[in-house]
Image 1: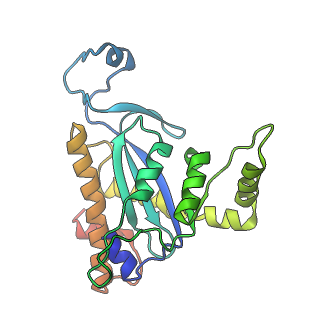
Image 2: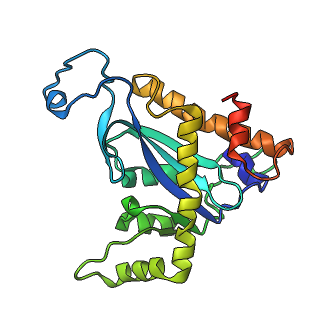
Length: 242
């Protein structure tokens, strides 16, 4: 689906956004004290789930959806992955941006990168990692996120800070709150995946990732059939009879 959005020029991948969201596991929580001892004190606990921390939600027992989205006039998921809640965002950055995008039938048979035309990737402070900046440059784009300033901040880090705090950097970063943040909340609301309706890692991953795929299909259908001149989230819910 992402290949179609890119090849048919439905999106402009010049600026894309990356983020994650914690999803509560179904049933009772598994307290860390019992987890460390390998004791399951009661039934109804998803023993595959783990604890993760969010600055806005605090500690959550469950899983995490990692997402990359487009920005601009059409906000749509471009890449997704699913982990337990304890996996840090910076650990998933490389897998998320390194997955090859299959070529369309009209192009060459070799795999092409989703980010071939990307200039900026925007993310929150969870992606402020020196290795990720270098990895992004190697991929041909720049990672833009809030950069922490230290007492003796090295020169290369000061360059990142100056760009983020510049008028251009702030304009690019502002797309995060207008794209991936509302998209994530909309996905959770439409498909009712928070809390998750099922226990177990593989079952939960299947539900969540299929929800992302279905969202892509519905948006693509709307565009191809000309039912929408622009993205209208309520139309997606209507198609699902929500």
